[in-house]
Image 1: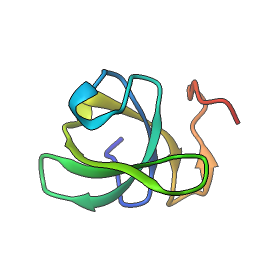
Image 2: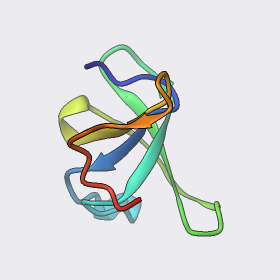
Image 3: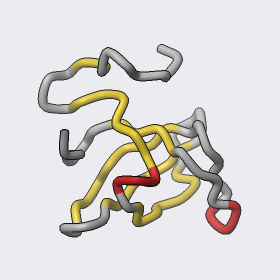
Length: 77
């Protein structure tokens, strides 16, 4: 499955330079061909970081196209 705009992802690695850690959830807001711009927000919806990620650095847990969580998603809902 290819990631798509507005999918929710879970980060698989720590990125301390961006103040985000493995397990954090973000939303894909832009596609660059081989990378995806992901927005991470705090509980109030304030942006923590916008980070360009490669697909191997995250897993999709919610699909925008189907409006549903993926069966193997580890996210807490």
